[in-house]
Length: 134
Length: 137
Image (cartoon, rainbow over all chains, first blue to last red):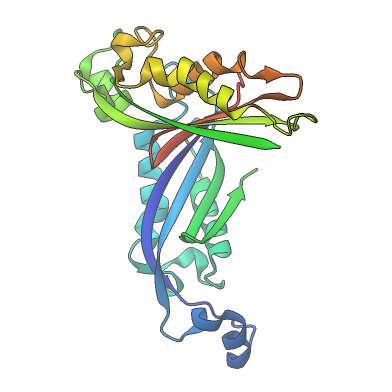
């Protein structure tokens, strides 16, 4: 069985690759390359998978919420992803890279009974990125 | 091909194990253990997997699916206190997980055609919490 819990955070970012020239960055990323960045209300869905335990649950909601709060939300909510979020420092702050970074931060020393199964992030209601974890 | 039908029901529940004390229940279920219960607008998504019937062009008759979901889930559970009025929740704690398992049990034998079978039950307790159950042990 799989349980999915939804979280929200507000953050700013700017898409810019150090491997490209300013003109190339502007062409590739368009408005997302504007120099001072911009923000989104991100929606993060975290899915865990496992058998139902004796309490009738596959995961303790409070423990999952605390983990996501401590590992992820505390580092990204009301932050500038390019400047404040260390896990992304060497990478372009695309939502693809953000999804991998969040997965790494969650998976590190994972101690919940149910396994981490999926990380899904919506940058806006129109763009969603989904990562199934092994 | 996957076909999904949505239904809603509003119900109250309380998550308490009678064998445990107040503190243990609170530790296990949080506010869901408050003794007199509380309610949710549950949203159910029933997904069927199959091939369209060559004559009807349908994986499953949607009207029949609606009637099955109403008869097995919505009619017995809507505007009810699950623990008091809907077996087996008199002795099974009505967590979202256990409600999804019960809904699967009620539906899967009724959604079984040569060309189509029940694939997944998704149950939203709130917009921010749902479980998916596909009949696994």
